[in-house]
Image (cartoon, rainbow, N blue to C red; front, side, top):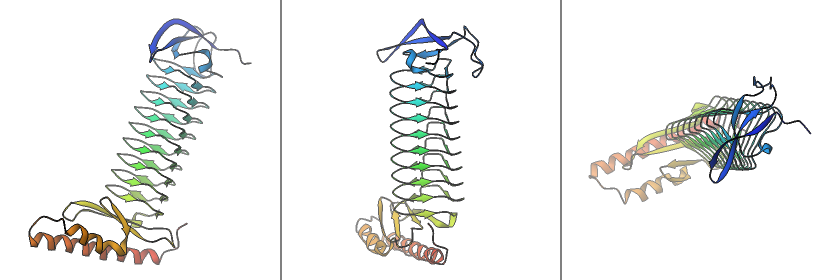
Length: 301
């Protein structure tokens, strides 16, 4: 059994009914640049730290959480529940890692970011700002999730992909390569965004979309009486092409019927109603022109 490199002191704090002790190094820890006698952060028990890992500042590790390897938790960060932080991973700032979440490798979680559930952040990935990675989501490679973005469900963000702003990536969606998802964009379902593609604004990419180029997604906004967004994203071959208008998603062949359904609730002059119909007519024509271009391309995977 590895000899412990720290001891619990009598300096304590109480967090959610749990007593946490500030730690003190009992020997030099060259891997962390720590000298014997230096005070660290707070842990609930000696079982919260193994290897040459270190907790410093006012950081807290509690419950069954474990920090090991050469990992660091510092600042005002919190690691609790059954979470694991290991390898050369770093959790700092006001970040929180909890539940059964894992942060490993050279990954970094910082700012006010949260990683929870069964989510994993690994490789050289970063989660920062007020971003939240949860559920069974995976963030790996050199991917970065920042801002107020959320990645959850069984979603995967990898490679050098960047998810930022107020973007949501969820379901079984994948964002990888050098792709970027930003603004208030949503990527969900079985959609994949990859290559150098950028999805932004109010775009909603769903279904079995395969977006590897900026021309593979078309967003029009505001449109119609409700001033909603309309998104068309290239779908996997053999899959029906759909379009999203506001909260409605359906086959593009049903778009005219959907517009007529909406038209029954429109309030405005006859001139207004004509203009809104004309907008949707032109939008559908543009969508079909884009679809024709996609049909001439090499099939996406």
